[in-house]
Length: 287
Image (cartoon, rainbow, N blue to C red; front, top):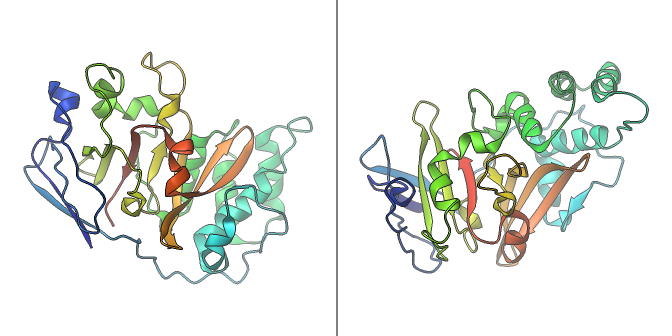
């Protein structure tokens, strides 16, 4: 078990202008100091590899009959693809959404038509929710998964944001002023985002720390951050799986890019190419 102790000053640099705490190199057991606005001391446990919820795969869930759109090596997650109900749903949804042709009909009409012919009850419920959307993006995709795939336990923002700038305030001061708060490799700081819903927001250098992520975490690509809050910060991914392969950690995530649902099979060595060259910002709940 990896145990992080969060002290009473979560994100002090974000709120008071102080420096972010230093962290030592990667260890199997580490202690990080965070600043909390609502609680004095919080002790949280993290497992290097998230414990999977044993949920039987519905026999009616169809296997993919197309080549999944994947960045990276999906074979690393072959066992999960065959046995995990979450991946069956996400890959089935990918196969439907990625066949949409905007020149023929609206997105809503297309999804409603697919809902009429789908026989799997779980997929039908996902499509029913998706049919309420006129134009899909990565934030809306995450919301659909949050409402229809409870196994992922995605954080329940309320209201759900239209832009991730709406839920980044605890980190905004540091991110928008890199000269005053320069990036320091190894820093990991966070705070309670919603005490009621047990949501935490982190601003972290996650290189070599993928084992701290869990299925259901939301990560926004900070390479798209703009201090004017009017553009960017719309590249959001949902973590589906975390596992070790050949002594390197990998995560499997899903996002929406240029009209396509994309699966991301990412190793530690290439993670910053997709999630940001410096800090990552992510939201999650400790499981």
